[in-house]
Length: 286
Image (tube, rainbow, N blue to C red):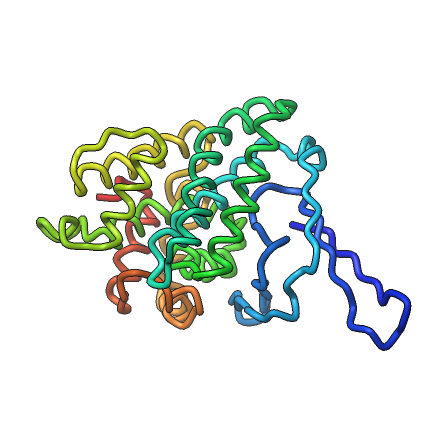
């Protein structure tokens, strides 16, 4: 979330100047041309991308995040990790976006739990704010993936905070993108190699592609447990009946989401459905 300030300068004929000041460490919206509009009547979220909403100036002051409650610190912090990982494996990823993602991942994994457990720790708060900024720079260059596509659809339908929806979905999307559902598939998937590199970046053992991806998934699952983020939709109080009623609509919305365009593995309705079913129960991602 950000505070947006506008002014017309000396002349009312000049375009509005947009200055963004983030008050959480999560969205990275202070440096992106992304925004999301929720249609409450249809239960859908629509991501919009336009340079007209790209701030001209971002002011980063981590002290503005010091009073953010632990639960919101956790949700927004995992949003940072999701941004960095999705941009890192994006079909449009490049050396510039990778450099942003890699530093964002190091900072986020290194500081998120401290910021959550000790909100007055200035170093951790500053680290998370810089991670959020860098992850925003990365995905603004190359897009996101189906963790966000599904989270937009699920969040709009069941009114789940965006970062929490991302957190629950992320491990299952990593498993899908890395072809952990296919014997020896991870060894041939470009995204899997990137996930393995991300695992090494945050200090996990270098154990070959498939096993390194599994280590990354387990690390994220353990982080969510420490942050007291539920592992599935059932744990959030969503009934199987309510889920079943909206399942088809969520799948349709996720496939149409702009973030799906840059996912490294092209999903179909069946793929999204299988991910959703796993997200409902909140079991292991692979």
